[in-house]
Length: 384
Image (cartoon, helix red, strand yellow):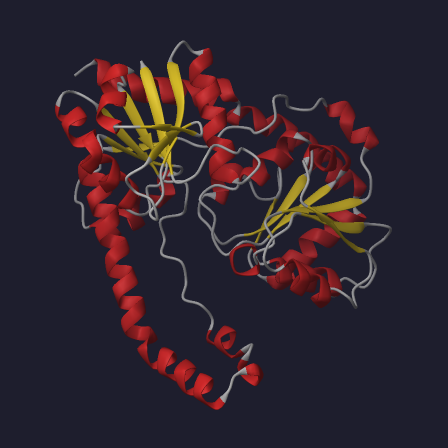
């Protein structure tokens, strides 16, 4: 089959989880004999122009036919704008002539929680009188705005489901919330495929002999989405770090704010954004505290490198990756998080046992295994 992926930005695997996941799937399907011609991208600011691997193409309808595209994989399945734009620029005619569309949800479909009220007052002291009045007006309007956003989100999911041949979630645990949000009473189009391992190899157990006393965070420094301040607080409340240092690898809009927040905490090092593989190979413990994740590529990256993860149990998908107490910990609250981390830092035998289990458990998400699930999905179109 000839398969085209569509997204809202060029393919840069280092930019984020969706981009890395896209490249991995494209490469594996290519290895399995399919023709993956690349990533077609456009933007909401310039919806009439499309680019394939950075090169402009026009018109889209001619491109689809000339390249004999069989399947389009829509990588934005949380909002309908990209699919609507694709359909209106020739995709609908292509679909009516036999083209197939798969929409892949890279997120937990649960609506994101509303912004904390306190966040609207962080810059209150900098506001002029009129600025404060406007801010209060915004707060009064928030309930209506949130209702509008939630209504649009539900409508988008429904449109995507109705106009895709298959809709893929990364965990069966997301099924109920997806059905409630869309109002659908059928799961005929739903399929479930996880992300695959990021790095080419699962490390050998011998790597555990060379681990250092490193507790690792690999994340975009966006505190609302990644909750790095929670991790800093956890580290602050552990009085004896026992020779461990917390290394935070990543960058983002809250980098300066988080570094300032951690100024009074010992043994924290901010490492900026960089390829993380060498850090996984050296680290013993990995930390995550995101309010929600669609999957968590950094978790499977940890497993394949023998880094034991401690995760705040905020998304149901985490149970698909971590067996609590075996290959990592799913902490239920702040104190549980502290207890799990301290256990790993003090009990070398427990850490080693869990690290060995982490390595063994990673094979579930190998490119070959996840690629087989893609093969099964694509094969359904051949049976029509």
